Length: 395
Ligand code: NAD
Ligand code: MG
Image 1 (cartoon, helix red, strand yellow):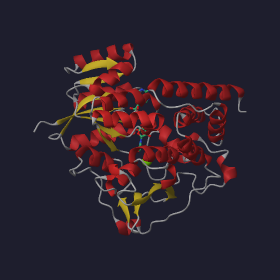
Image 2: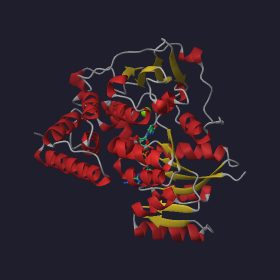
Image 3: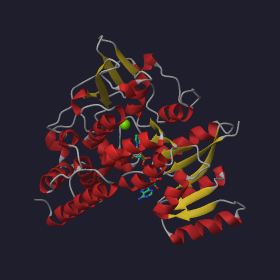
Image 4: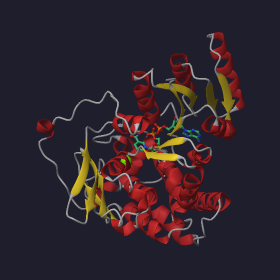
């Protein structure tokens, strides 16, 4: 059998590199068809030299010309494309079998949707795309017959714990609740007063996972769990009230499904994203991911606690947006992206991330998310309100 052709959107990122690590272990099964990058283009060049993809995609014309020249002089036939059109082209290309959607943030929405609309197998890491456009995204999945597989470790765990016919509806298959685990992030035990002064370096030092900077800050604020709650509602057709967040500091249980007969199924493993990536790539088969076997004697204990929405108000804001529906999740996501960048640039305090998002959501009325234009409009509006907030320095 010919190897499957895989497009890796966001190949230079944390998920992108883990994906290429798994692909490299199985050259007989998978081949990198297209690799994309946005910054650190020297790394994209090195990845191209190693994986020899048919296409590479970079953000600008200048960068495309430079990379094209470099790759040509190294003897590669890789074609370099540019911008969002280039990303959409390699997502929907007729020869592609699966697309790893691992661009961070709203920038991944169009290329991920292009993969869905082309009926590809889509491995979804880019949770922001689904959070923004949930209803449209899931409609497109149903319309095209695209196979959507979650890469987020929690959602991949839930997928593994659900019966294969879960799409009939959670209550029909006897599911009472989804238990979404959260590590609690680096500030799980920090008193509220201490959160005011935490730095980007502290926020990005996650105790269990090594990830990109944006998702690391989201984990520290627990907005990541809020986005994941919305993600779970769309992926599994759940109501927000059916998803309970459970803080589990060891990150060994990746999530659980609670059934009406009292059975609770969990998926466990070392905290290494190559497990969900390998699971989704090979599904319904299983392949080696390079992850060490779980040593329960070393883990020794599993702890659980309730999340603290006083110290981590982002979780509450996300639940409210999930309940409000419409464009509220898109606005929440957009305001959060602006707030996280501002925090990483030291323009606002960590605790102002939630204040800013709360203010933006209050200032802007919710609209129906019935077209991509409506979603992109809400995203742009929330970004501009968030920028105003920054210029004013708060309320
Ligand atoms: P990262 O910052 O390490 O990588 C992001 C990738 O996206 C890079 O390749 C970057 O070049 C590209 N990119 C950034 N901005 C872009 C733009 N405007 N246009 C095109 N490409 C752009 O991030 P990551 O940690 O790999 O996370 C990627 C996605 O996966 C995020 O949505 C994140 O929430 C999700 N995710 C990550 C992890 C993890 O362990 N890292 C776990 C679960 C989910
Ligand atoms: Mg996750």
